[in-house]
Amino acid sequence: MKFLLDENVEYRLVSFLQNLGHNVTAIGYNYPHSLPDSGVLELAQKEQRILLTNDHSDFGELIFRQHHPHSGIIIFRLKIGDIETKQKRLQEVITEYTSQLDQFIVITSRRVRIRKTIEKLAA
Image (cartoon, rainbow, N blue to C red):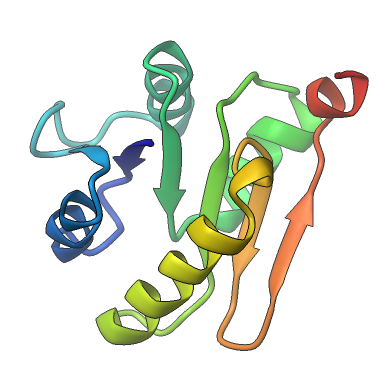
């Protein structure tokens, strides 16, 4: 799978995902810092990457109100710096929800919430 890490996501997830065999790039390392969220989303869509971010409100606005296309978004709602929990939960989502990774996914410590978007509902 192909992933793009937003610059607000711990860079340590790059090597974790690469060790699982995934293709991973990151804002601020492979692309310029401080891209606007719409630019990050456009980049992920263009490269067919699943976006990993901690930024729920801005991407929720772009997806659900402005109907921007996307290739999947995974949002962490976990404590910043709790890398072990993020790794564990992310691996669970990748394994258990493989067919739904093109959706809008929110990961918390207790649950996974999957929201279909307009373009995905039509498919």
